[in-house]
Image 1 (tube, helix red, strand yellow):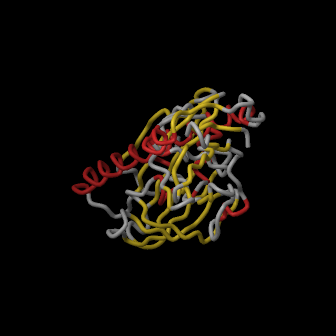
Image 2 (spheres, helix red, strand yellow; image 1 turned 45 degrees about the horizontal axis):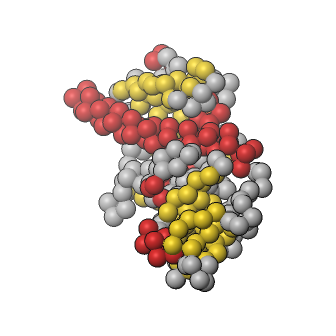
Image 3 (cartoon, rainbow, N blue to C red; image 1 turned 120 degrees about the vertical axis):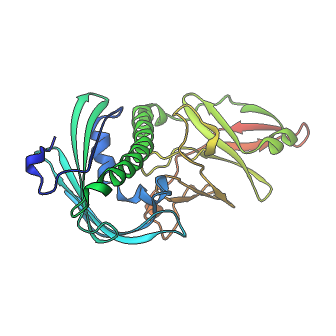
Length: 288
């Protein structure tokens, strides 16, 4: 924890909490600048990276929701020996202010955070109100981040099982009549510890894996699943699914990542195929 005597400006507020995620997941989240306008869309409308390395990053951001945002340049730098990072506003709204966050591992899957908000040249009369705004904002941001980190851990824990070949009966897995499946789509289907989504695209029933190959984001929509409730929807545009964590897009027909996103080198995990009996109109899930 950063002592007040170490600060040039005393904090106007301090937020403390235990995050139910390992310190490894928290540091991963700290360096993950890409998720800000996706997971935290109510607080960040856009971000344009200027520099990134193992000790932090600097970016031009649009603060606030789309249509109501204001520009700022922020820089995040990590003091690894002190297990601390500082987020400074270099230009724009809040320029000169900084937020100092200190991390401490409490257990294998829990991390204590101490967040000090430093706002220079603020009057005593305004400090309490501004501090309350910061506390409310960071409570929401950490709520959202905690859920993402917890799902990420579940994805990592399940990865070994997910790497096994898909095992289905030789005759396929019966799902029901075609008319019923089309009417119910999109459908979240789970078996053998895996989660898939059945969707209808341009009249064709397709199946895709619901784990984003980037950082394990939820591609199953708001339906839930064995890896926990997703954070936001995973919208479809034709055969393209978009991850709500980082905006990476994938073609569910080919599994390929799409330009211009950096996901272009990634592919969705293999998913089962669908067969429809021409006589009985029964839909079956079959091995890929």
